[in-house]
Image (cartoon, rainbow, N blue to C red):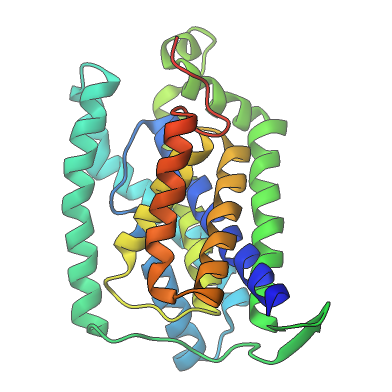
Length: 290
């Protein structure tokens, strides 16, 4: 049972980390606090559900369509909804407040559309649900596949940010957009690209989560909350921190659900979050403000 709890926790933590990486990128580069982020995760889950149950397309193959579609959708959202806010904002603080209000409204729009189409029921589908024995623990194959893809995609995402010219530009904008302009970086394009790429990461997380968890139209806020906690725990803008924080939360929730009570998973999340902030307010890998 212990092995099962650990493997389940690592899988869940990997999903948290993957989703949080996208939000870290959106906020770190674009300075957009996207409260509708979790709704985009759920949208991807429902698309994967429709692909699997109505079209017979498995979720892994569906990623080939869902990832570019999500990138394009988030690009449009930034250009239409958020670009006017960026243009009128006097500073980053003002932009953060305006983006919170705008994406809060977007949250209800997306959730309302999902409720009309799918109602308030919980959904799931059967994909690679056969058992696999690993070190004495019986794990569903879909969890292992989801974890494998999360690792590969997360690593690829990290390499893009640290080993490519575009990744260097994005990190420069995150540190200081004014200085980035002085070295001929198109800050507006970089911000839009980061927002769209972060949205694509949310879609990947939504598809992978749908493979082994039930979901509903009202669960978006849960993913937004978990992503925010992971981002803050790990240190805002720190990808390694998001990974470590996600794994900590995932394993802790799995152990609590297995040995104590599934209803206490949210409580343990907040307890760990508060302990980290009390001990290290800037996050596990964050830098204290000077």
